[in-house]
Amino acid sequence: MLRLEARLLEFPPGFKFGAATAAYQIEGAWNASDKAVSIWDELIHKHRDRVVDGSDGDVACDSYHQWKRDVEMAAELGLDTYRFSLSWTRLLPIGFAHVVSEDGKAYYSKLIDALLAKGIEPVVTLYHFDLPQKFQDLGGWANPLVANWFAAYARVAFSLYADRVKTWITVNEPIAVCDSSYNGYMAPDIKDEDVGMYLCNKNILMAHAKAWRIYDEEFRPKYKGQISFINHLVWFEPAGKAEEEVTALAMEYIASRYCHPIFSEEGGWPPALETYLFTKSIKEGYKRSRLPAFTSEEIELIRGTYDFYALNHYTSKVVRFARSGEKVGGWPLDGSAELGIVLEARPNWKPTSCWWIKQHPEGFRNVLVWLKEQYGDQKFLVTEIGYPSKGSNLDDTERVQYFQDYLTQMLLAIQIDKVNVIGFSAWSLMDNFEWMDGYSTKARALPDFQLRSTLTSSKSALFFLKIALLTSLG
Ligand code: GAL
Image (cartoon, rainbow, N blue to C red; front, side, top):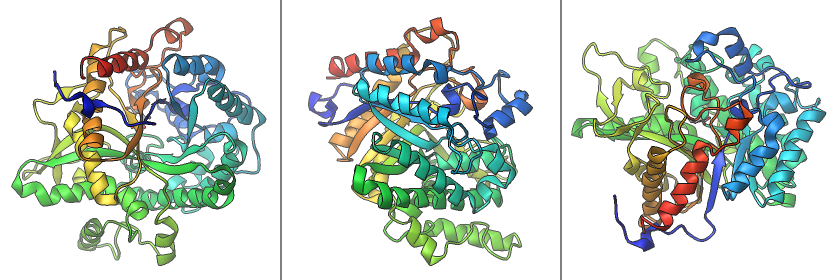
């Protein structure tokens, strides 16, 4: 085991430990009261075959009914923060902001109050993949009007809960919302990587920016909270010298495409990628870039709409050029087809039960350092790291080791590289519905109350992690 000076493994004062979930993955009660259908309800009810075990989120962890137990579990874990998402269609049954569900409103209000009563800070995500199906039928994230619909929804949420919720996330992982959806992997199951994906990319940035500005102007003066959005960051490293340049471009593709417009000083698309996609589009016969342009007003609207940088991190990849005739693409988040590259894991990176997540803890430190270099010395909040495994045993030594390895690297980034990480959330508070993996991985929901209320995977992992950090690592 890695032995490091105790000093390097200390969490900074005020550092916050948390756990995270998302509405569709835990709430169940998909049609309770006046709740309407989201794109996940729709996709899974129509195409059960798309989920590996044919399951759905109809009941999931039943958090809609068992939220008190969720709060107890968070308290038993000693969490400082609990990050959960609001279901748009539970709060606004017709999607539009003028009809607010009384039951939806009360559900989140009770949850927030119960967390606060236990001294746990709620961190609320407005959008975690579950668009109202009604809006999907109107073009979804490819329709520019979605930015206004989202902003109106955000205003309702702020007006209901901003008195008690001080940390907000507009959108979880826009790259999953756009890239993984428009390559046909996740809901709404549309395959349009050439154009739809980039329209979504622009519109989701606009949606975020409008919601951020509403908070900033109408709610922050009174409630003094903070708001940002979450990027999914993968660390890419070149296979060799020849791949150094394309690896930098791949980082622009996976990371900067969603954060350069917000976090860079100049705003707008990351320049090298913008040029690359323009040139490629023209060669393909398009009259303009497939990456839609921003007007100068749009650049200004989006630029600077953050209070901290939030990131989810799960894995790293090695980048190499595709050999002639080699198949590219296939990983939901990859951009490899667009860039003509292949993304691989090194043979010595430990596997997990999820095919695309291989363990490379040093990649986590590299990502944090890279972000600081790119976007400056600011507050970083790690909103998800986690370890998917198979099976139902609660003897979670591998998960504990994973957290120990990854958090050690995070501490090195904090203590040595001076990256200002202010907190982290484990994925997840409890096993739950893992999108296309259903309940097949052990981030798995246990709808049975008996099982659900036992020591869940994340509980044991976090519990032992704390002991590990306090004892063996030091
Ligand atoms: C993230 C996502 C979560 C959860 C997690 C574990 O990308 O935000 O909802 O699915 O992956 O795989």
